[in-house]
Length: 134
Image (cartoon, rainbow, N blue to C red):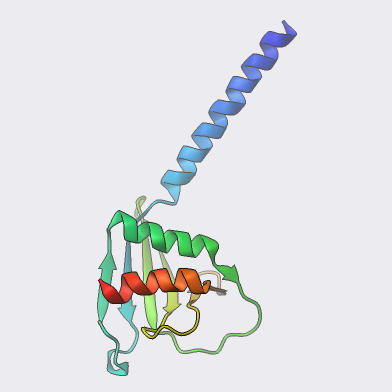
């Protein structure tokens, strides 16, 4: 009887874990990302660009997950508004500061939370190749 109870409990926990993972994947699935230049007169290479391809969205999502939270005050002009639309229809607004030249790291600002993050040089390079070479 004791073994049977442990087996049932293990099955329930495993099922809950699997359902949780599937639900988490669905709830954060991105359907599109739109970048808008904040000042077209500032020589932006494009006024607006929308990404919907699975590989591109995966790169953006990967960069966002791996971004390092920064501390301190931030005083920078935004380069791009980044609108992330999720499959459930919700949308979040970010600022993405990334330059076309191969220098420096990208900066991501969550407009809802007021927090900002830096992307590694590797993640910045990957996003650069998607944003400026497609």
